[in-house]
Length: 57
Image (cartoon, rainbow, N blue to C red; front, side, top):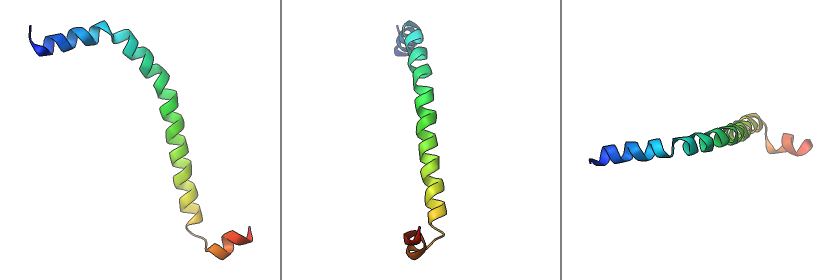
């Protein structure tokens, strides 16, 4: 049996497990991306102001 065929059999064997893990990971990935995007937006907004303006808040 070739290595490719072994890999396909392994993937088929654990397909349901992979699907479950991915379905749990997608909301976590979306949350992490949201945090990253918020951080970038904050940095862009703060970048337009000087330290004196930020200290006045």
